[in-house]
Image 1 (cartoon, helix red, strand yellow):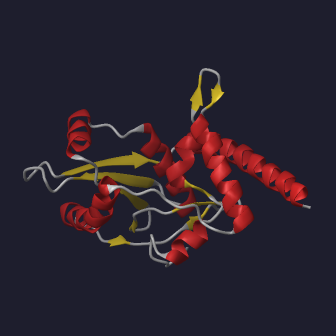
Image 2 (image 1 turned 135 degrees about the vertical axis):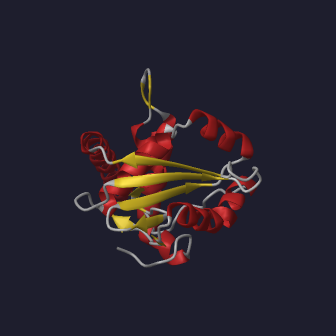
Length: 206
């Protein structure tokens, strides 16, 4: 388990070329005609990262910056509400699948982990009213649980712009080993394709 701070250069280096939890939904995304373009685009990103040993430029906007700035406040609010302490961690490699990892927003006790989102207000309101976690985050959290060897993950949506009592949404997601096995099969297949493309491109380089 890594003690490296998330979003630091060392953290990005640890994740270089690896399939990570936040992109599992892209790996498994399908349309009526097959896999989605998001899968192909992510595969291309990992191929280039492996061949250059350079992390792809990550796109950021004001909404993402807002999320980064408020993550610490969200974590503190969660700790206060749940009367729990959260341990921050860096990247954690998958126990059996090489070149795959996860970076939970915290570990809780011996069994739990944490995924924090600080979205725009409209999204937060929809989450509070709907009480559901989007599938892309569900997939991300299942991957975090298998990498970190945890039995549950608390999803947190936090918006300090909301009135008191509605700023913090928490939903506990339990580990689903049957579903994780399906995800693992998809990731193994995806990473084999990445390997094959890297090998073919290296041959063309001469």
